[in-house]
Image (tube, rainbow over all chains, first blue to last red; front, side, top):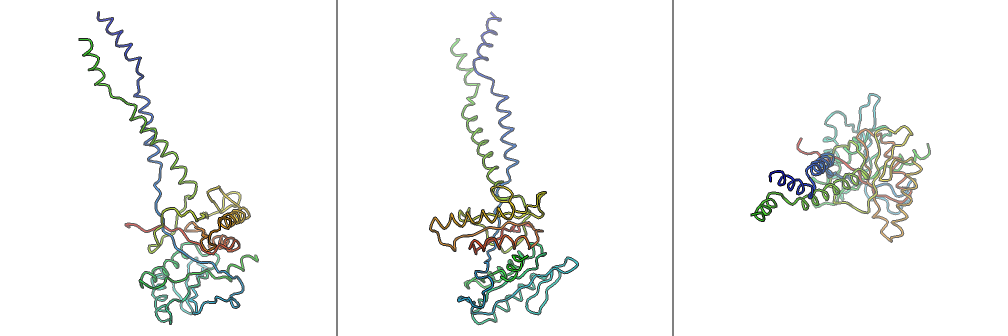
Length: 165
Length: 151
């Protein structure tokens, strides 16, 4: 009797598959994929414009009515980035907040308070410095809500020079 | 007597089928998602900018160009969703992109390229990408940045 019951049990067990190993494996896979998935971190974006009319800026019909603010970013021999606005030089760890103040004061002083900003970086400047400069312009926009955002452009001259290389 | 025993056994054993269905679906979902994320956006150390706009949800008008910190063994700096590219290939890609947009009768000013460059990428390379863009009459570029968070 006991034997026949155990046989019956055996028959029962074989009828439905043992799911445990499969579930173990699938869960492991699931956990693996969940861990390796780097969630899409939302990135920030900074807008900029490229010059539309290379080399013909003076003849262009839509010349900017206002004097642009030219921001030069140079790389010194010791791999230090120096930012120039006009004849003013910005250096050191807090240069971008000083640059922000400078741009803001120029913008406030200008008649329509919306001069374009032209960024003219040296070719060896690391990308972070360009982004930091763009960021300073963006900060100016944020400091004066309701106003049109500054038009940030890249210098056409620099773009052309490289093409001729 | 025997019947009662069998119902008892069924009660004890859970029905695994729905759970396995769900788990498999999840696995497939994660597999697809991991692949899609890595395709478009290369792993780069993006520059920090705390005043950057937050990115809107997937802009379809946008073409993504990744620029690495250093070229690979074959001197290629550029990576897009189609893999690594030389400068000539990038030029061709942007041309096709511009053409596609033109055929769809979309506004030219809508064309936009998202440049994702590494924190240490020299400006030279970013500039070259921008030249290629302006050659194809794409005048709007945006730069991907890392939004500084709780540091």
